[in-house]
Length: 137
Image (cartoon, rainbow, N blue to C red; front, side):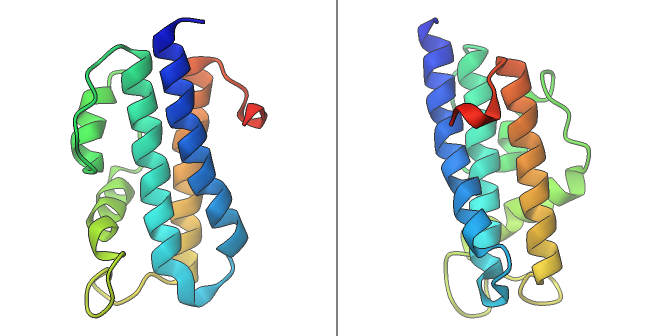
């Protein structure tokens, strides 16, 4: 296995940790902002895994839209609006108060579950591209 693929798999492992963390709290309504945060992190790490695999310099950013521009020729995001929304929530979800909110308030449990599914979908697509079985992690 070449070094780029090894590094890409390390990024995927880190993203899988975020998805696993979500699985423990997915039904806890008061933690929807934390679920959203981990969903963003899983997507970010999946995109960075793909960059590593394709031997493209990984830019130092948490911005999902910017990262997606770098990988969109290799992976399709079917709901770009959801990507934008998770991206907006990311930074603010870590802090209390009026930030980390959707226009209508804190993400609902339904929102959080959709973000989790979305992050899982992107993670699974990257696993397919890298020809890595998800259960390997």
